Length: 225
Length: 395
Image (cartoon, rainbow over all chains, first blue to last red; front, top):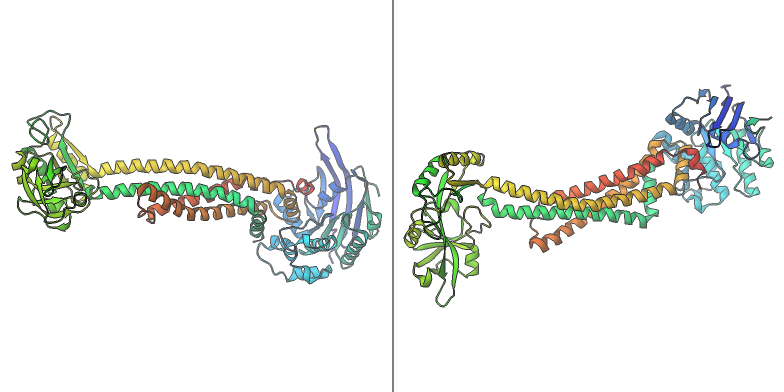
């Protein structure tokens, strides 16, 4: 069994140079995430949650410190390597679903597969994935705007999972859903976590955070508990 | 590939603005191709008119030279002409090619009882030289001094047929000749322009106009590669001390004419090219709009693993589709445009479907596609180099 942490942050500092003076968004952040964890990251606005999520998703690089994803040091990676890392090992789920309006649901889910394989792919895996997030077959050929918000988020989850990532990063996944639909989505996330998916979720909502097994609180760029 | 599909769909959902961008390319291709076709048709028309004389060296008395014993000739005794002795030297210098002496004048003539007198050019040629210089479309070559050949336009305009009689001179004082043949159309010519003229025998000409010298000598060169050598040989022979003759290599002259037409064609095509540049700016504008509208989409793509080059390809595909579709439509419309312009300006469309005209459609289409791609590069590069975080935050 692989006991290596899925993610490790070591003394990570992120400073944004601004004309009015440098802003330290993260200041010496250290933590690790083991395989199979379900973590919530909470904190007030401006505390550094989004910066942390961007660094975890390899969308940004730290000013100093080290970040390891599945044992791979990401700090010195090129843009191409970071993009491949995002494609192969990280799944993103956004508050506003962020599906591609020009593609139908099946195409949205197969999109990351095509990025990985660089050729046309068998949509059967995408169909199975959509069924696993409880989306009806009749919706598969619809465009995202033709289905409800909850259904769109399920499509986004299927898209995030299609390349079998090591980590699922969630940014306020229920922030744009009503409470009942949001609860349904979180039940689904819990189910995925029970099956072994590692989940890191940024949220303001304590009720949503309650679905996670561990909470990292952040304030003024530092982890406070 | 999915990025190709996305590019296609994006064009489809913005069909109006895509069509407008393509319209610019269509107009640009039409402008370039139609102007090219017109220019080429013009060259071919002239080329067709001159092709029968492209194998000749024309020797004429030097207009600004010393008289050196020249006398008599066209129009009167003071005109310059080439003597029999000069002709013999030219003949030797140009051997083994055929040197044909030509006499030329203009006179009144009457084509039948009751008809009006007209004035036309009269050429005098040795009967044995005529088949080397002229082809007949009807009748036969004159054998005796009483026969005359007429040009095709002359025959048509004056309703002259083989067997018709032509009275030459005022009140026919030079005599009456019978038409034995009608000469094939020759168009513009450097040697003899017979379309609106008549051709009599040298003997009849000498007797009727009291001539014993020539107005020009036409040397028909068998091997076209020998043209410059024949020209030089004649010049060396005749212009040893003074310049007494002008020697013109007709192929060289034609090349100069074609070169001038080529430059005109290039110039008018370049004017068409300006409209293509305007179309390119339109493509650039539309592509920039497309990038701006899709910044968030680009951010999502980048966040889930699309490489910069893949994002770039998506926008280049879009520019390519606009360019290819616009160019194809433009290419087709160019045929119609070329047809109309050729019909109106040249009264002929026979040169429209020849390869040298069609190539201008290929040029126009290629230019349209290349301009579209070039104008798509900057927006595509900009899209590919967006910061994924900024792009994701974009509303």
